[in-house]
Length: 118
Image: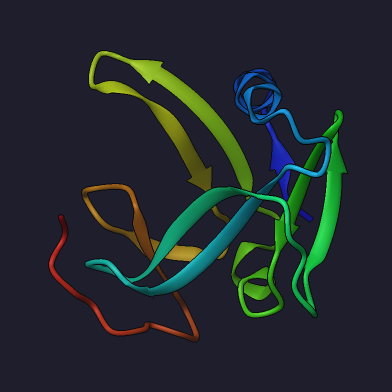
């Protein structure tokens, strides 16, 4: 299960409202890459794929594919607005290390293939 903080919920509601499509969901995924082995990805999506898991949090649909769900179980998505800029961030209890850029991570069992941080 993935949770959303109140700031993330509020920001997502604004973004989804602009899409003008009631089927719009937040797709959260991981993919090989980044300087720690895996990197996070998020996108607004209206299409479900076979094997997707769908969660609903305060009116926000969150979609996670079957590959990513194992890496994101228990994760929390937050929206942070600070001196260095604003954006979504993932707090992942499965990550044993993260990259300085904050967009990639490594798990204990699956290190992935580290790449240069962008």
